[in-house]
Image 1 (cartoon, one colour):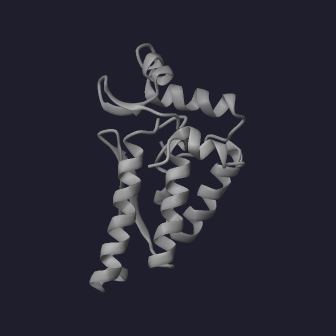
Image 2 (cartoon, rainbow, N blue to C red; image 1 turned 60 degrees about the horizontal axis):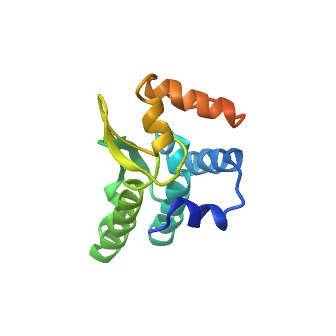
Length: 153
């Protein structure tokens, strides 16, 4: 599993680049791709690449955070072949496992924390959750990085 530092070292994409890439993926594979905050952008971009190798025209039905872990559901029509289904579910499983160690907001190494919800945050964002709500922290992160707030929540 890649850590934040390993991803960041070889990653020359800015947050804006990542946001644009996720929007491009959403246009092709389903708008549900943008339900997560940008901290999981690298995971989602890698998941798109992995799924695209197995099912080039997959359709994302729902991609979200649930209990601090990435959840991905794709259209089953493309997965009739058992080998293709296994490869697709393996790719999804790898992304879900990676999400357990990446901050939902910034992507840094994180652990699951339980406030009023189970979330996966780095120490900095865990501390912020003590005084602010999740949406407020995400909006703050977007503002700090000059990003447009274009999520549906």
